Length: 149
Image (cartoon, rainbow, N blue to C red):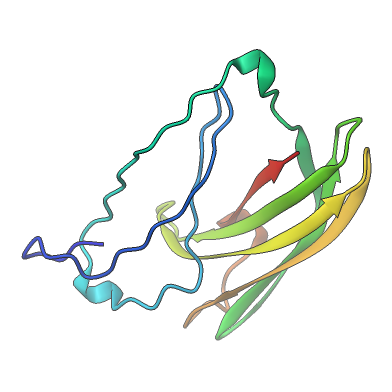
């Protein structure tokens, strides 16, 4: 994260993966940053380990029954994550991004779910902290899911 003087305000590193053709949304929950000082986020990708698409089939997941409850200091997003595959999912991350009236993100958080059986479901709850979130409704929230075999 970079400030107006092009100085690094905060940085963090994570390892991840992306399936062929996938558009990836990255949420870094729990990062303490003075957002008033940040003017841009920079992402650097390195140490690629390419795999054949046929050896790394994508995982199909969906979600349903999304409900939101907004209070002044947090938004709670609950729902069911659905494994649409004939194999178990070892790990899934469900994230919620709260957007303002212009579609810009103003808050985000995520939760990790361990093993979801074939064609099974798993309940999730995501708590997004922040000031002045009491007016948030379901259409202000974007749910993103990352799943791994």
